[in-house]
Length: 506
Image 1: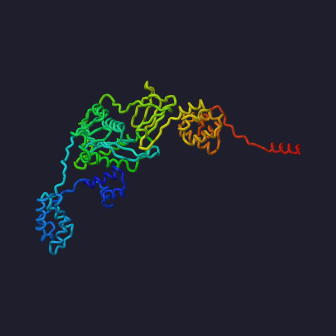
Image 2 (image 1 turned 90 degrees about the vertical axis):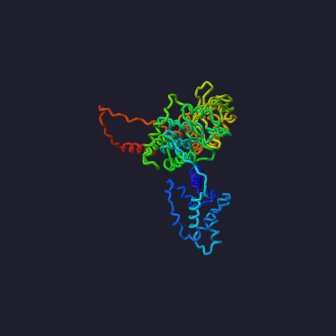
Image 3 (image 1 turned 180 degrees about the vertical axis):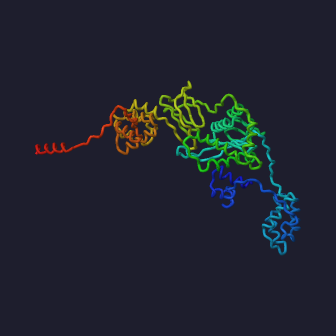
């Protein structure tokens, strides 16, 4: 099972391809695909062989094999006979030996188990009481509004019943962890009595020499607020929380294949909770009960939800630069505030999905969608910048705002006349305020294509792109108005008049 778990973890947890796993483990493709496609991990029923009837073809050599294995008890474990070594010695030292290696291996395994020579590291079965849970993250790809993302999903499993729930998130930070846990707590109407975790950096800051853990202040507040006990696994010991390890793979295969597509992450997470409810109607893998029946025992043991809601957001103050911007995640992610907020401190309220900017009196300034990923990214709210520079259009090329603009906008502003530049900036601000900065950029692309540089043409292109024409309701016909038939048109009189005029002119 160690080999099976290692291969499945490389594929399902780390996202490695089969060729990469072949290179890393040395196993062949057939073995790897066999383990990846396994769905039943119940141990096979043990079959106790008859000592007298096992491997009858080996009968002439059994006493010799037994002698070698008995002598192994006196030597270090790493110098004992393997089945391969026994087979080779028989070929060299036993006259007339013509048995297969598979037959020898079967008998050696049987005798070693009787002599207790094949002692391997074992694990005591863990007993999980109703109400206990285990939590872990998995990795999954999904499409939100047709945009592909590599995200994380948190799984909370209940080992007693084999039930579990999951929530899909953009990342694995503290805000994602807490918001996912809170959503599950509220859905199940309670809190697990004890939760088992890995030593993830979102919770554990340091593993102490005595085996204890130094925990983050936010996690301590979270656990105290909801009242659950916590327990952490030993490093590199994923088997200690096998329930959630298996559930992470089960959720991916059954709920996230193929990669889900949706327009709202919040709505999709509600669907995941409902799907997990329906999934509990299946039979338990060990007991003659459904998962739902055993989960009811978990529910009765849950702690009640607290009366006061827990705020999972992170609050911090940052200093903006000379263009009214700030960075997070060690400078990887950049956010705008406004040209009015340059070189000043602002307050941030950071959730799993948003970065809300406030002034020092906690008045809202701007809200950004939170950025994720290791690469450098920028989230700009261009409206205040465009409005600010439109009041001083002559300073455009000498301002830092111009350097921040996308390349197509820079190109377009260079082609505009100085007389129209202020009006064009006002138009772009208006379009951004109406349907967003992307629509303004698309309008500029069309203006570059048709080589138009005046404000009226820019407005017309925008209307053509986004159908900015109000739809008039149908005019109701009143009962007192009679139906008027269409009058026939006779243009012959006009023809005679035109001919006559032509004759006079001639």
